[in-house]
Image (cartoon, rainbow, N blue to C red):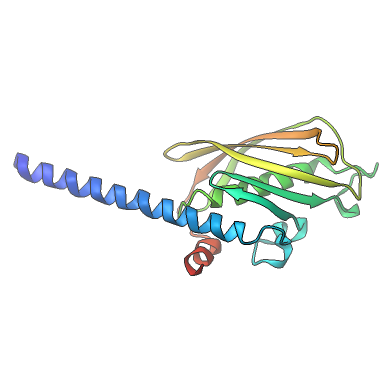
Length: 180
């Protein structure tokens, strides 16, 4: 292969790579727009996975790489002392991180491969909590995210760090974003 052909091939690869980045950026913008249009809406009323429906959070804010969702602590989410169960702390943060990942615009689903939680406080049945999630780093294959839950007084009651793997599975929400 001569030098000119090699440069031509490199140029084509670079154009393809840039077009891919542009499509990711556009898809992310569409997802943010979709989520912002759903602010104040119970996620349980939207076409979302069963756990997200059951948690039934309300979107408070969404931008690329950051999402905030409010949840009401229900009796079925409690431990025997009527406090928010630790597993539900984890589920709320993992689910909010998942919603946050949709704002990045990747075509493939991001699956949690590592999740660490610190429990720092409590929330009682009947109280509302807010989960804030943020993407801290986007690598070639791994995304690192953080999340926290605050109670009605604004105190942090748990924090999480997560690593997520980019996959090739195309979830339904990407189809929704194309239609919006």
